[in-house]
Image 1 (cartoon, rainbow, N blue to C red):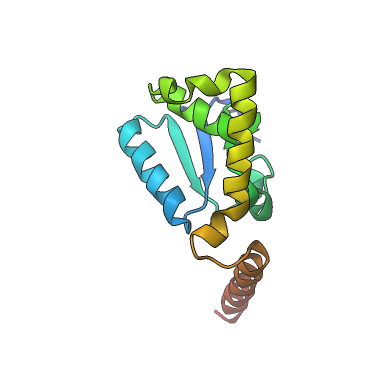
Image 2: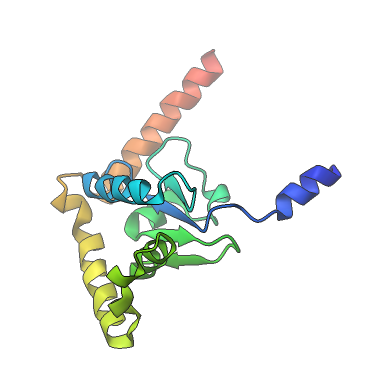
Length: 154
């Protein structure tokens, strides 16, 4: 391994949080579009679409597709993983809108917010008119097999 490769491996990224989001969820995409506008090209948030066929869990703290689909996850530059309302609290703070989630820093309010978010996360697919997670995973795996077979033929 070259010196540059070693240095690159330990170099801190320029983003402050990596957000794993479902690019096939209309409400998630709406939120990402809003956050992208608030980021104003500063690169504070690294948006990673877990629905993309090229999503790689190894590049994202080993968070597999099914796990990422269950709850929102954020990855900090030091590799720590956060999830649930803590992700929103962190992103909004980094984008200068921390006041929106400030109340959720209080233990009781934070616990209630996480509980409400958990209900939303459990019902998100159904509420947005999508199949259940098992069906989405099966479709994803089928597409990957077809893609893999095409690559072998080419």
